[in-house]
Each structure stands twice: as C-alpha cells, then as structure tokens.
Length: 325
Image (cartoon, rainbow, N blue to C red; front, side, top):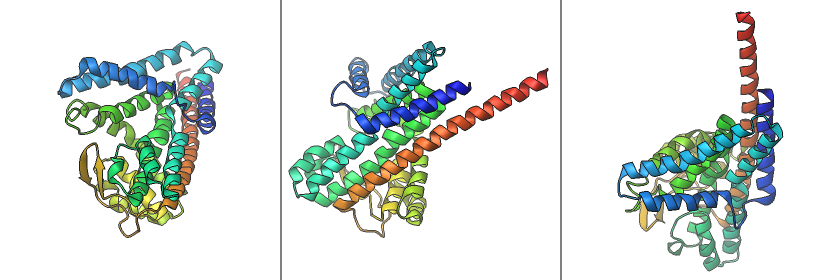
C-alpha cells in the first residue's frame, strides 16, 4: 500500500515535469488518438437523441477508463513499470504548457498589432469566432480560456489522478475531450451531447473549486479574487467555469464575461469582477503566470493528499488488525 501511493506520487511529479519540458507533441498525441476513435464511434451511433449520446459517452469514456484500469492492474506487481505508466498518463492528460504556449502566441501577435495572426491562433485555445473579435476582445478571450483550461487541462486531471490513479487520469481526460467534441449546444449536439456535457460538469466540479481556491492563494490580489468568486462565480452559465473565471478576474484585477460569439451563436454572459477594466495584452502573460503557479500548487496539494490518505488508511488497517487479534 505504501509503495502504491509513493509510486503514484513519483509518477505524477515525473509526468508534470514531462509536460513542462516536452508539452504536447504536434502529432501522435494520445488524446488526439482518443478523439479520432470517439469520432469513429460517433459516426456509428449518432442520432438526434439523448440515449444515443449517452451510449456514445459510456462506450468512449468507459472504454478508456476500463482499459487504463486493466493496464494498471497488469502492472500491480511491477512498481517501477506502474510508476512509469502513471508518469506517461499524467504527461498525456496535462496540457498546461501547451495552454501557456498558445496564449502567449496570441498575446505576442496582439502586442505587435497583427490581428490576422492572432485570429489564426485563437482557435487553438477556444471555440469562439475570431473574425468577430477585435484586439481587446481577443485578449479577454485568451484570459478567460487560460482560466478555464487551467482547471480542465491541469487541476481537474490531477485531482482525479489522486483519487483514482491512472484510470482517474484517463477517465477525466476522456470525459473532458468528449465534452469539447460534442458537449456544446449546436443543433447537431444539443441532445446527442447532453450526457457528455453533464458528466463533464460532475467530473469538473472538484477541480474547478480547487482551481478557484488556489487562484485566491496564488494571485496578486487575494481579497479581490475571493470577493469576485463569492459575488460572481455562481452567475456564469457553466457551474465550473464560473468560479474559475471569477477568481482569476479578481486575482488579476480585470473584468471578464459579457457578450461573445461561439459556435455560430451569440451569448450574453454575466460580467465577472465588474468594477475592473477589461483585460489588456499584458494581462495575458499575467494570466499564464498565475495558471502556472496554480498548476504547481495543485500538484503539491493532490500528491500530498494522496500520500496522507494512504497513511491514514494504513494506520486504520493496522488498528483493525490489532483489535481482531
């Protein structure tokens, strides 16, 4: 038991370092391979019906989780290989370095006034229509995407890894990927993507709250982050993006939310931290740095939590053993 938890902790740290060093490859990424497989399943199962969408979610996310569990079980007597598997899975599901890289690419283009390049790179971060955005609106989109994806691409995965090991890592990334693929409210996916979107809301809940709390702790304006989270976090239509974006807005001292064009439709979202000014280009770099600090703290919190839980469980088992003798 002790070796299992220590092995997970070592693997998680190695995987996190791997993401810092190598980030996501342009080709051959495991998440991209999962996306292609999920797309193939969708082509067979798609109907404009929630039941078919639920089956799609169960087949794709459930299949990925079961496969990861079987692989981890096969290595239960090989601690070194199991640690290596944890490291590889952690690297595969984390996206913090690529998130920062893409945000800085848009920020760099905006800094020199090249809106065409900024519009070309923005879809790497979010699904908004870049042609409808000017420079300040793109800066806001980047800051919001950095905040939300800090939870989705880093903290949430680490939370589920600590709770469920390699299957937890893989299942969370599978659910999050399915939500990005089919979980939006377009005519094609309004019903078919319902199950993926709802499951993503559930899976993302603990990571989003931890992200918001760590943004309060790590941000330059702790009181502002906490105030914005409390006041505005629940106003956002997403139960998970709301607390994260609100805490980032308060921590950075910027105003987020408002009107946006997404997936061929216009949405009017509540304003977060309304007393502040909209983000400017330099705020993109500040958001990326805050994201990096939050991710590092999340690694420490989740690894420590896993080790502490293992210690408590061992002591409980020892105590039960003494009482039965």
